[in-house]
Image (cartoon, rainbow, N blue to C red; front, side, top):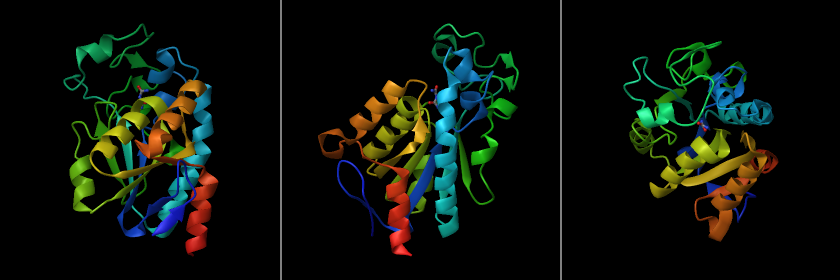
Length: 223
Ligand code: C5J
């Protein structure tokens, strides 16, 4: 078992049953003209998560540990997009509308792709998901069960929406979840801070959080 200095207490994982889940590091959430910006958000906050997420990917890849990427997106005919999701709020462009990176949040469009710095490499799994949680209407649960996965390390955006929803889904399914603090971001810094607090409150009611440096040090101590 590898011990990581985490909150609210040490997170221990078996390297044979750990998976890195990188949530929705897509152009539509991070770059100008995408879904995040059409909703009126300040996308500049997203930049902070890119370097730490890329480093986490490198740490897993160097060890040959599995990586799963997710992408929030919809079919071109919007058959998997509930009208309530499309009609919510007052965006300048809605899901499926034409934007500067193609149709907003539509599978296969440039904006729905993962940013270059965090793109999947050969052998890594990419899960397309129509919801905020990565277990809803996807093969993720079966895939993790087939691999005998016990522990999940999380990165990605946005902290309080798709990252937190997926961690809660994973926790309910019995996985031990560690969120790397610098490798996630929100459009609202106060929501990120609150989410980290919520996850690790009450003795880790949803999971653990740790700085990237603690995770890196834990791996270096093993080698
Ligand atoms: C949002 C996400 N924020 N990936 N999606 O709508 O967090």
